[in-house]
Length: 96
Image (cartoon, rainbow, N blue to C red):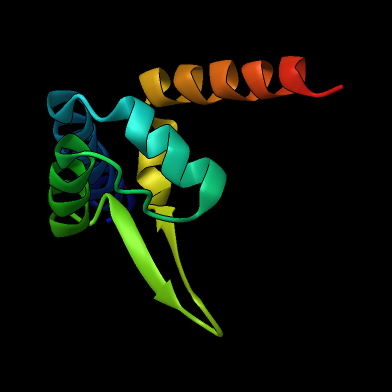
């Protein structure tokens, strides 16, 4: 039983990985993580938001305010981890 649950989780993670990597939206997803918001500055941003929300890669939350977060499985994608680390390093370098 445990192995079949692990298989289901692995398949779900693989599905998210395929969607994210095929989307070309790693930079945009990195911004969502950092800002917990959907910044839609271009048509490409809007298309990314549509795809990622429809695929439940980005999740919308409503508490006192609306905010957004990535599905937990998405955080395990190595390419996103790398982009996130690069983004954090760039931010640290800009700080006085």
